[in-house]
Image (cartoon, rainbow, N blue to C red; front, side):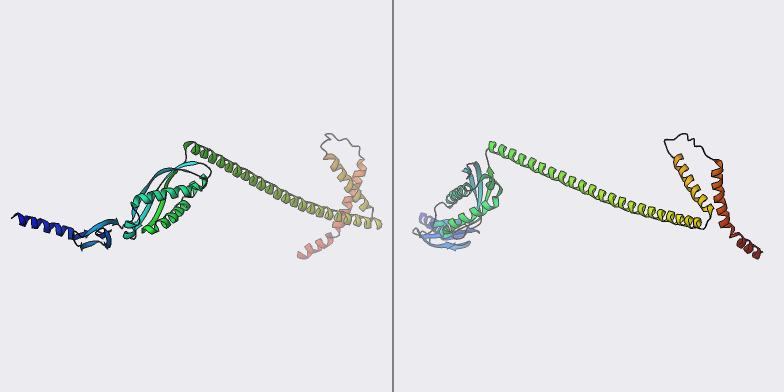
Length: 313
């Protein structure tokens, strides 16, 4: 009876050692007497018990590795504290098992040293404003270094870059000064544009005013020219009448100038009372001469008008 129990236990132990179930997303290496012989993919497998054994269990899924914070000195001697995160995936379980010991610790130290190398070659301003360039440079360097390990680095992300407090305050003051400078420049440019617009408006207004004055001067000159032509024509007609011996034309001309002179004297703002000695007979004679001229002019048309009215009757 004890022998049966011992045999059953031994058989159960053989079954446990012979049947291996590999979960999805993992690869296991098989070692025979400590030497690598093969890889078990996900699923059920049977191995030789007590001869073959499981060497390493590698996770083939993409993994995340947190990089602890560290202090980095930039090229302009600024001390910053930075941390990162690394995403990687094992492509070759054999290399990951036998080409490197303690893969996670090796990756962590490799990322930390490359962060110091990349960030240490940059100035602080460039470091703070070029996260994408830093991530790309780290990814290229680390992926090249881990290729012999059968590992693919998919992403390296800088999580935080923290300068010291006094440096942050200095940067804030610098940024404030730059913004005030830009605001002053924009305000000055606005005032300049406003002054230019005002000057252009005044220039356009002066041009339009000058054009208006020019046009008014042209119209005034034309009016004076026409008035002069009318006076010249009137003078010529009076001269012709004088040549014909008509003294009434002289009376008309003299009376017209006399009345115009009186009108100018009367319209003066400085004269409140005007006392001028006049000969009534001269004025009446002049007016009478004007009346006779009018009768002569309009009297010629009177018979014709009478004849037209009589014919209508």
